[in-house]
Image (tube, rainbow, N blue to C red):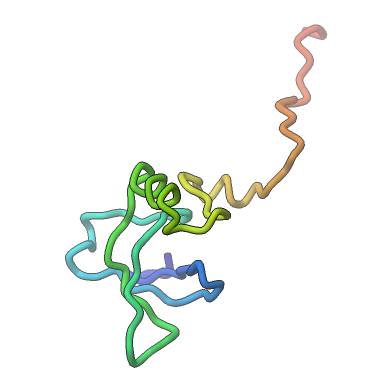
Length: 101
């Protein structure tokens, strides 16, 4: 989110565009990082899009199953999940040994 109803949208065609939340969605639908959204490209400005709809996780899974979303689309991930990356070391060790206590 950039403020004033704007956010940075990474489109599946590989281009990052400036998205503007339309007035009907503002303060009613909360958009966070990692959400799958529907955008409408502007005819006169290729670098700007209007955010039209936010898909739920179930709707996004259905779109992926129907082939409307690419296979590399990540569904239901938060900003924390994206920041952690694709670490294959799922080590749950916190560094605390309860035997020493």
